[in-house]
Amino acid sequence: MANKNNRTIFRNEEGKWVNKKDGNSKATSLHDTQKDAVTKATQQIGKDGGGELTIKGVDGKIRSKDTVPPGKDPNPPKDKEH
Figure (cartoon, one colour):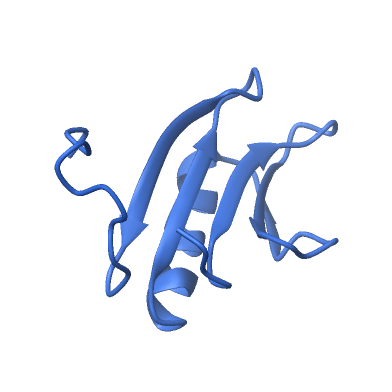
């Protein structure tokens, strides 16, 4: 989904969870827990008109991708996660 509101959650070298808007050089926010980072990113994507949220695990690999409304899922039949 090519959308300027897409965000990625990942863990940085200091152990903080980063909420970063795709394409930006700096983090939007830092959090102690992944859950807090996901909550904040989901709120921001929704407020900005929807988009895709990519969540990476401690190992840096993608764990989950979610479309946040009112964004449109590019592959709705294949998305069986939720």
